[in-house]
Image (tube, rainbow, N blue to C red):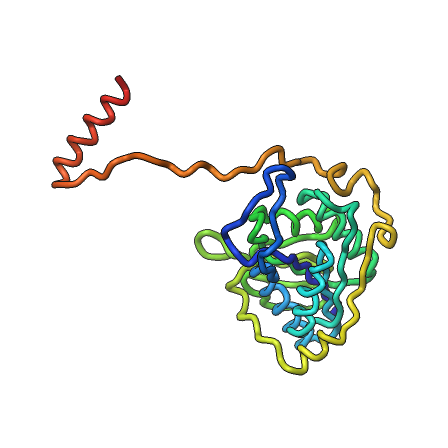
Length: 260
C-alpha cells in the first residue's frame, strides 16, 4: 500500500504574534513542531504500512526549516520526506495550498491513500485535506476515528460525528482526515532517529512541479487576509457582590442606565 501523509509545521504556542505590516505570523523566536493532528496521520500511515506492507511518503509545504518536521516523521516510521518550498508559493490560502500539494502528489505518481490531520492548529480551517481531494478528484472521508477494514481496493471507516459515528465505505485511492481518537502516536526509536538524521529530504520547487502560476501564491488565492489584529484588552467594569436577588437588582439598574 502506497500511503501519502500531508503534514504542516506550526508554532508550538497558542500565543500567536502577528506582524501588523505583512499580516503574517511572526515565527522568529518561536519553536516549531509538527501540527498535533498530523501526528495521528503519520501514526496511522505507519500502522497501515506495518499491516499491509508498502511505503509511507510524507509531504510538507513550507519554508526550508520544515525539513525538521519531515525528519521527525521519518524517525516515527515514514520512509521518505518531500519538502515543497518556493517563494512563488508564499501567501497561498487553503485552496492554493491544496492545489500545490495535489500537484506534488500527482508528481509522486501511483498511490492508494492520502492521510491528513483534520485541521492545523494555526489556521483551524480544516479545508486543505478536502481541497486536495477535490483537486485530485478522489473520494474523501473527514473526521475518521477508525479504519475498520481494507480489502479489494475498498476501505471501511468510522467517521466521528457530534453524537456517535457513521460507517462509510469508500473506493481507493481516497483521502482521509483523521482525529485524535484514531490512535496513540508512538515515540521515535533510536534506529528511527538515526535513519532520520541520515535521510535525504527531497526538495520540490515550482520548477519541478510546473504548476499554473495563476493558481499559486497570492495570485491563486480566492481569499486574502486584509488585516489581522489582537482585540484591545477590556478595561473598567465592576464586580457585583451580595445575594443573588441583590446582584440581580443592581444588574437591572445598571442595564437601565446604559439604555437611557
